[in-house]
Image: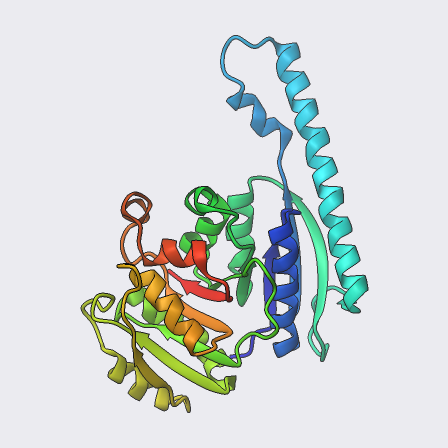
Length: 288
């Protein structure tokens, strides 16, 4: 299946600009459409958070300030999008069949970001999200986790710096779980177009389920002939070892399952998903 539509939630941060560049690179590979979406907060959502002890006038003032800030941010994000597409000569148009080049358009919706993005993502082939700014944002990013858990679609986490290419050399983080199987299924179009594919596996990473050799045999049925690399943890971290192996392969895309363990457990104890979300310097496509 070809990739035809990418959803890109935009926040206006520096990471958001890198995500815009990453989305465009992916779209150019598939002649796909980038639907850039900014979700503007509804000032009425502030009122329940105001708490007791505030007068009606104070709540109104708070809502007014929130509305003003939301409008300013929305204009800034739209301006960033306009500057980017103009500088890169991107065709700005609504998505339509028959357009044989990458295109993009921008829209603003009022609501709760995590709800709107997860819902809109269900009719996209891929969701591109900015790289979390730090460990705190990784654990608290509701939009990121909403698309992972509630959209049913693959999520591409952009690196801090836009890559030169995406999908020419692809690594698969394989541990035999249902999540990693979903990641492979979503990645097959990319794998079939890649110049080289490598399955990354490790004794401390593998769970109950098919092994790397069985995955390689399955992919051969789809015309993909990967090599297999057994990696070792780095600094006692499986996630660090996985990223090091992907770097050694010169990968420009890593695909893997997300949160084979619970999100709460990974938040408290750490885990491969969290490490990759925080530390990856290449595009990472995840499925849950």
